[in-house]
Image 1 (cartoon, one colour):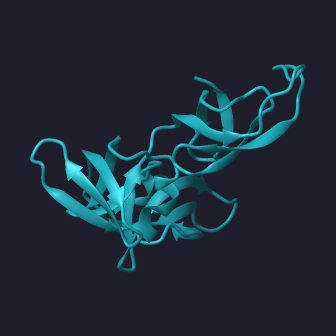
Image 2 (cartoon, helix red, strand yellow):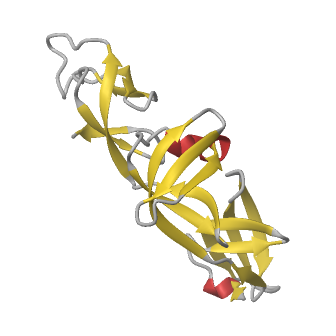
Image 3 (cartoon, rainbow, N blue to C red):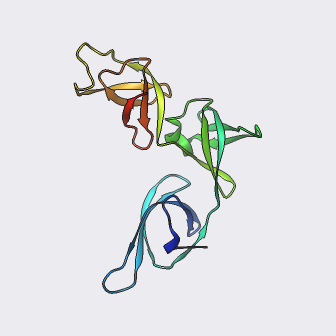
Length: 186
């Protein structure tokens, strides 16, 4: 069991039979009345984020999580297929459950698959990824780093992001995975 005073960002807890990841928490001690904990939780099954308040000292079942290095093989429209790099065992996850993470993942890339209580649940992405630009309007003379402005660019995964005007086809760019923002050329 895990208590509210042991919560940490990134912990997984079970609340009323549903598994959540703790995104943010804040202990609050008002002038009168009991202390409580305000939390922001992401549901592991579908990624929905909820705000929830608990009494101080409330206990939850701690959920066993494990991240395994796996190779992303392919997505066939229904399932995303992964292979364990050590045992060569293959698993399939519903593509809809990992749709957001696959936007930043190329086939044959090494990824961390998060297992919750022994079942594959989601992918853990790094803070940023480097991807190649496959399609964008050509840069014009005078489009410099200090020029400002942006244009759409399609990456090798098929995702479209906004990039500065000086980025061309074939350039590798660094993208923040949480927001999808362009960071720099790689």
